[in-house]
Image (cartoon, rainbow, N blue to C red):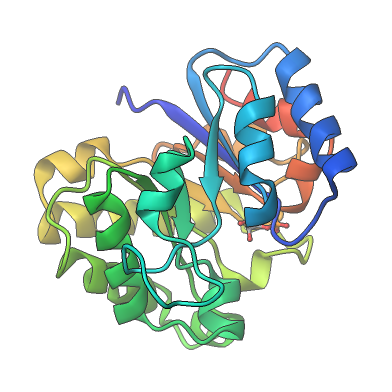
Length: 247
Ligand SMILES: O=C[C@H](O)COP(=O)(O)O
């Protein structure tokens, strides 16, 4: 299909100056598939360190932004500030923020619009809970999350969708290749129907949830899996093998 493979490393709230430099050095010194776009997302305190330390061609993402450009918003960071610091991507709508910090679809959509308006790329996360999956509501939940964004954003050229079933995140329970491909295909069909033919053809759809160097190759073979958003394994040297899963 010609979509460039994309692998994001979401460090979440992990790392120290020392350990993050070690992870970045490991990437800097590795032979990485030149056809794969690589983005790492350290905690916000370490974004500049990552930008300064990472070799050219490897990009840095924030794990979140606020939807206003500047002002009295204690503790928040804007898309413009990220751009100013050489950060080119942000993750948005991660389930940990949706669930623990109670971010709703509208807020995620508003932040996605703010990020895109400022020229950032967005890794837009979606995914269902185990309860929703067992109730047969996976596609309904995922498309509802995406629809809130589509209502505000028409140009999806800088959006990468990350499908992350909540029950697979950090649990060691990876979705089967069939489960993942089924949802990715449904997301692509939804993009065709609700956004555009072009968005359906070009939007990368990543899988996230207990991806490791062991399961990544099978997942990468699926027609609609265009890469991964990796949590725990992105902190380990084997992250390189996941980046190279599509070789
Ligand atoms: O953003 C990454 C996902 O939440 C996956 O995390 P995990 O690879 O630790 O399961």
